[in-house]
Length: 224
Length: 96
Image 1: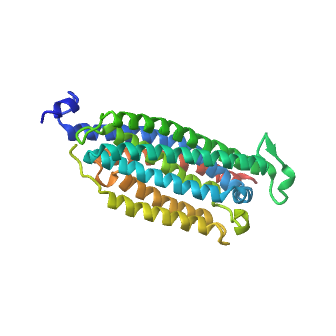
Image 2 (image 1 turned 90 degrees about the horizontal axis):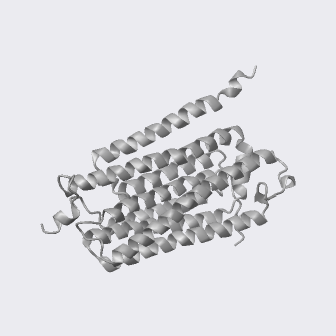
């Protein structure tokens, strides 16, 4: 194969060997990311058990409608990312570029909704230190509520940072794809950063129930 | 590259299931089911995460080395969580 030598790095036996090594490296990075978020999830778990009532009450005051919409947005972006990898595998360059741009657009939409939600939280007096009214919490300890909210901002904030990095990378991939950098023989960057994108999606899949769904919501909370 | 290609039709089906599970888990939060909010939410979340990993992340055709790395990551996460929580969740036992 003429183009094989161009895409096979000299220290690998063949493309399959190279692909396995690429995937292994990305999974190793993701394993460290699991521990980064794992520390936060562990801290959350310790206090969720200790201050169960305050956590459930505070959780039910968060905006579940925006969270649900954002979950659908992020899952859709994972679908377009998976389709990007397929487009690269079968050599459909136009589809690859469009799917990557769509992925970045959906990721950006998620962040826009998150900003709207943070703004709502601010107006609802749900920001410890900036806008928090202890008098609104009659049945629970406001200090425990603030601890839940701290976990909420740090976990969603760190997730948003990861998503922002992902959007930048996906836009770069779209530019490279448009220039014709990826072929069915070489598309490792698309596939490996796709793994990162899906990982960020998985983090959100766990943030949704733990932050928004541990208390009971009322239909009137939706403000429809 | 020498690997199996997952067709878009599979992605569409997995996506449909993920969206359905999202509606289910959000819908459950409106029911009076107490602690099952957390248990049910985490269970549905785990099912969704496995679907994303197996199909979107191609783990179903992944190499043994990838599986070992994921197993190691989850094992370390287990150490982090179990050892921390066995401390925090049993502290009140000593309040005598």
